[in-house]
Image: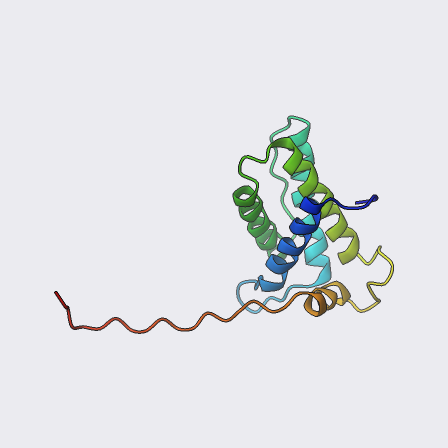
Length: 142
C-alpha cells in the first residue's frame, strides 16, 4: 500500500484487523506481532502467486501464525466471492501492509514486541460479547 489505499483496501484492513484482534490460538499459546507478520506474509504470498496463475498455499512458520493464516484464508475466500483478480491484488496489498506494520517497519508503530497488536486494540473496538442463548424449554407447545 505504497500509494493511497482504495476504499476496498481500507475496508479490508479494518475487517482483517478485527479478525486479528478476535483470533485466539488454541491452548496456552499467545498471539504476538511476529505471528501476525508471518501469517500476513504467507497469505499475501499465496494471493500473489494466485494472481500469477500459480496455485499454491504457502504455510506460516509456526502453529500460532498458521492458525491465523487459515482464519484469514477462510475469511478472504468468503468476502472475496465474485471479486476476481482485483480482489486478490487488493487483499495482497493490504496483507503486505499488515505485515510491515507487524514487523514494525512502519513509522509510529512502536518498539514494544506487541506494539502492532496494541495499536489494533486502540483503534478497533472489541468484538461484541454474544449473550448466552436461553436454554430450550422442555415444554413443547403446539
